[in-house]
Image 1 (cartoon, helix red, strand yellow):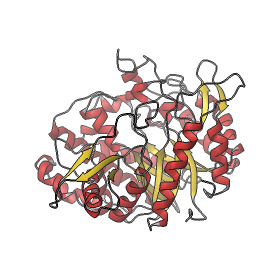
Image 2: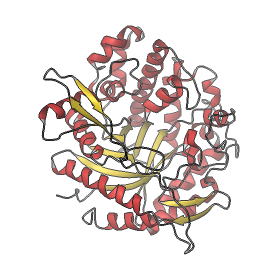
Image 3: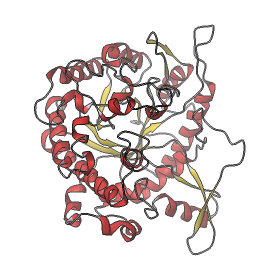
Image 4: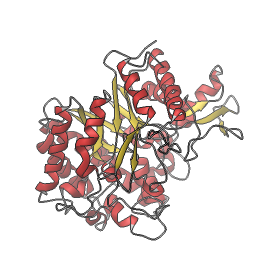
Length: 452
């Protein structure tokens, strides 16, 4: 049992988390620039003004990838760096940065994977209502068109939206991510529908403007894992739990954000709860939302255990026992999430599947020998990759894996308190120190996972 010969091994980052240069060369504020300025919103009272200074140090970061055999790099574009007013005039200096980055990647033999939107919405568009504004699909299509025209001659792999569940669930419902809103359910549904329309419009624009384009979409959710894999009732219960869209809100649901995009319909249990809140004409909109995708992605870090409670399809979540292994940020270590998540997603959507993010926050530091030793991260990734390989061996069409993240970086509301990187960043000096895990991952890539 092994990964396919053309398996895609890569690393991932996001613009706001690493670039810095928050107001340089014509860039306007994003919602995250404004959110970081609000008292008490970021755990360590930090911001993304400098972050990893990747805007000025991208050549060093690309060289590190190349030295370690990383041939695929998923990064996102800062919308307010490209279009400071959200729409209209292109900021040439901002576009030039991505030109330099893309050219540098290609010179080093690294395939660029461009995420159109990874959360840093121009603040000026949020002031017009953001995802609640029915013009958002038009704004998103215009922005995507700029990326297609400027970079589509060299970039062929595009991901439309990263983690819509977090964009809206954390930012528009829970209020703990930018822009920090707590909306009523009706408004949540409006925002989600506009986001889905934006995804569909972006797909159309990319198909029209980029020759040989490949398009993906990267939602998220903690996979439901059957407590007892040998019990068919637990397996069926986990499948049902993973795709459930009812309850108080569908904003953390897999199916609410993926069924319309892939299958052309909202999930039935979600419609029963929330269909009344969908805007007029939503059925017609599904034709625009559902566009052909070349691959389907998910960001997966942890799973939840599910057990059937009877023979009628009812189930319960089984808590992990006291002392269960956890990462530095408190997330449970659950390797089987990378078996059951991809398997269930392949069974439902039948699209080539790629892990767009997976990784671990560790308590990392530079030791007296000048190195960063992170055996727990190595063990974590090894265990998760073995489960992903098992899913491939059992018939799921698994095409790739992107480790999160290349660099330690600004981890949203947690600030700089978490380190997910394969490369240690000293934020005071911006010195990069490759961790043991980077050398190990380079070996995994060389061996196509045969050494796990």
